[in-house]
Length: 289
Image (cartoon, rainbow, N blue to C red; front, top):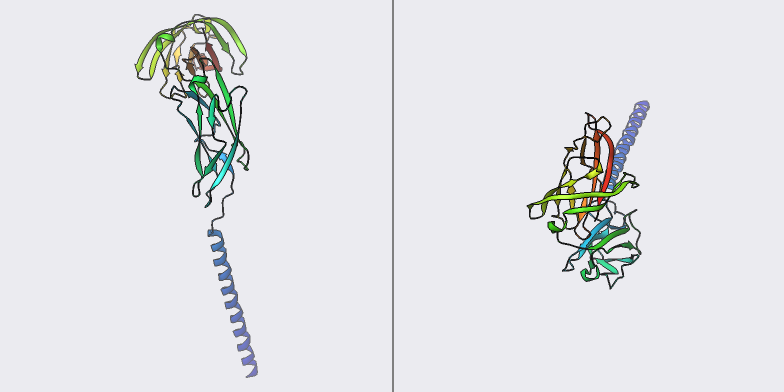
């Protein structure tokens, strides 16, 4: 009888231990799950926060001194107001003379991003003058490579097609590396025709200085900060195996024009052979008077 009771006690003790272990393990699992579900506070870093990765913009200053707004703020949201301070540097542009912008900005509680308002002065920018202003966050830890923003200031000029046609005696060509390849020589811009309120088309004549066909191009100035030129893929008229037989716009490169300086900058892929072999990518033409 004693032996049976002893066995019974041992079994009961074992069951109690197992149940205790299960309950304990269950408590640990529940607590662990709660810990995982608890959101951790995001680190606080200041940053310029444009919609893309570019930290540089062209700012054409119009006659109304329309300001340029730069998104800036923090990587998290706080329940307190937070201030960000800035410094401005430029080789020529002077704050208060050529432009104005705040030394600090206040990001209100509950917000992460606001705008730094930068205003250039149209009357301080005669045609041909261009300045670069570098704005830097100075008093906060910032996201890597997002503590600095660059603005290129220049007077905005209305597009007058009659002033953009004709002879360009200072045309030069540049390799994709930026080194001069050829020039200066003379090209022409002809048959400029408006195709919409902010678009036109025309032809480059004697581009490449090697007897090419006239090269058709399309102009678009719907975005005042980004005048663009597009050259559709087209034949040059050359047929030799080593000739440039076709050209097209080189994407991701500079393709623009300036009404202020009366210049065209066009980057092309030079193609040859039956399979459109790329002989040169991003080959740049700069047409100037």
